[in-house]
Length: 293
Image (cartoon, rainbow, N blue to C red; front, side, top):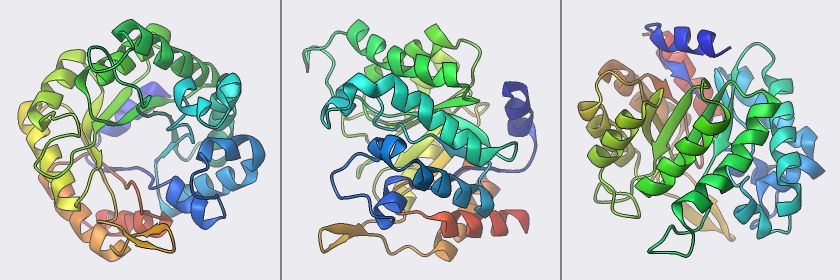
């Protein structure tokens, strides 16, 4: 499957990724504050339904419901002792929905912990945290890893090191989240992020989440300038949210996001999808405009 993914990346067409997980599960009834990973165990049919909706919309890569699947993140909801089970089960659910129509990416997000000297964990501590998650995802048979929404260089380095220890031949997609001012929450510039990821030999790199759509795309452009030979990923939010009854509401329409996607494709972006606030309808609109190019 890795060979097929690399062949697909080398093809001229854009590779379409999926959109938001939390947004859609909240629409299905996931309570605010409850981690989506809990539904991997308690409402697996909703996870499969979500994945299938993205595949039907045209997504060629779907992310496992494991963004918060490290033990420190799961411990906040008392699920750390079931971390391996959650990660393996999430892959099974994604594979059930994907069949042979989409690649399954093992999703790895930030631990929520700081590495010394800003925090109490050593670099090796964080590698081991990620390694535990990556091992479960690899054993369950992911086609690639998506390390996403990172803001610190050393945490990204730790996640990549962890994946390489357990699955050295599995492709790695890696993305940082950039806020206003063109830097991550930890002050990392896109150029610095690209230099790190280029040196570590990731399969594809780029930007996801962030704030404004154009800010995320601009960060990805800056990364491409540093690493022009590495496929670039753009997975923005559906604009800035506003709060209604305690829930975030995103106003960017599928058609508006698709118009951006057409421009990014013309600029050479290789992988396009969505993050917070995006839905299968956004992915369907992106697929339609890209197939019409």
